[in-house]
Length: 340
Image 1 (cartoon, one colour):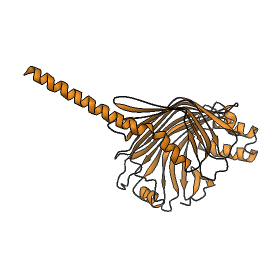
Image 2: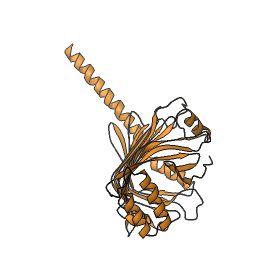
Image 3: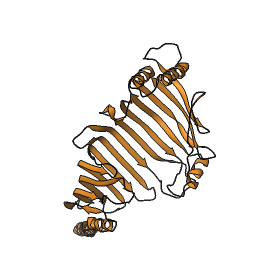
Image 4: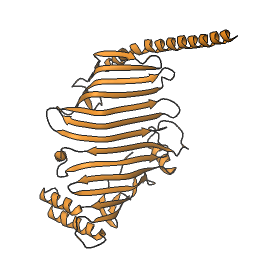
């Protein structure tokens, strides 16, 4: 009896392994021609796609597609609406479990470069980690994680350093208007090694978090965005921290749309070191003396004391209503209407 039980157990294991192996090789068969199918589809649009090497590993539980030296090239005279005319990725990995091909993970490693369609310069990128995941189930989840990402112009200066960037999308493409969950989340931390790329600004870093609350499908505009707004949908702005030219500002608030589908912002802006910023913008002639004086008057108005100490901070209500950007009760600028 004991031997029969052992035989049954090992027979079950053997059948399971054979079935799993067979299923893996079926996935392997479809995966090995994956890049050729992409190549054929893109060639129909006059886009050149090539790779140096395609390796498939991951047996027995995963199908791991490793693409080396991926090249994408659009013809220079193309009138297609692509922002990039060429793209190169040193190593691209796409992985999915054999039991659920709809659960895709991807990563990019090594160096990459791209050329913008309207620019002759080539941009180089490098990163410690660029990983993402897309789940094509009922939740329609998508996640992207970027760490220590560096952007530079080839043979020139560094433009941007991203310490961390996280993107999370949940149920964003479903047709469920009654859903009011948190579906879109972005967490970012940008550093700018070359502060001169923004004229007169000297931006050092910019970080924060954005949450889109409420169901907002990416189709049927403007009806979908109107339904989103009327159902109580809003954008949450959390800890937008900007450091530039001695200034440090933090913005928190919420953004939605009014009955005319125009922006309606309610937020609080905390500013520290604004005198230094205005002085530097004055020296660089980014603003004229009258604008600088007006800025000092308005910002000093919100100061809790008459002190000009650079260490002091002020809090200002920042709003957009009826197409006017206002600092407290001061209407600063008329905002152009959005034509959806």
